[in-house]
Image (cartoon, rainbow over all chains, first blue to last red; front, side, top):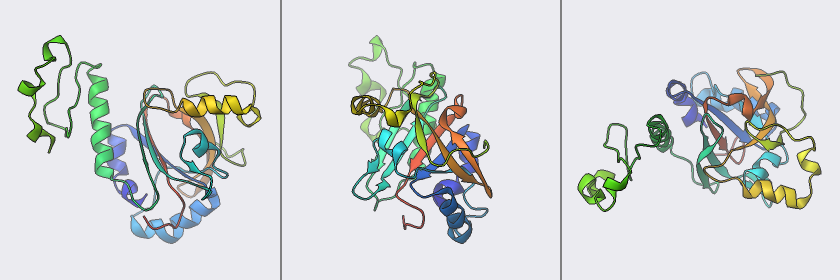
Length: 151
Length: 84
């Protein structure tokens, strides 16, 4: 959470709002912020920290673990129309990668801004070439894109 | 954030950007619940929800559909004070 908080200004520049959510109460969020998060990142977590006591929201999103009574690490990218564009769900011991979050948001924004005329191939990074899906590209991806571009 | 009015987080029972249904989600039959769960997939509308929230020293209420028109990243995580 602190990692996302550190990059929050950059996310805002991309017109992204972050909502973090766990089964903890908003009271516990406050103490976590004051006791720990504010010492990990200057100013603490700037975005809303939501409470999902009982996991009702996590259940709907398919990330609630009933045995543990907690939400697993589920990350959803939702576009301005309210459509889920990406889902990443990890078991608790492995943390997420904020850089990959940025890459995916920038890719989805590029595709949206192109109105679907462009697609981002494997390993795409901002500035790297995109593909223009259409009849002309069928069977010709090997000419337009090399496997080395993925890394 | 809006003023805090609800006690705990809950799905509204409708999708983001769609009219809210009259029945409460928790009163729905099991089948209805499964319908909603089955529909959480990429390319579909996100289920709307409201939840109490903490931000910048304040408590308030957040509703997902209030963010229509912006990109939103929702991060579920196991718990405060955990290690990752």
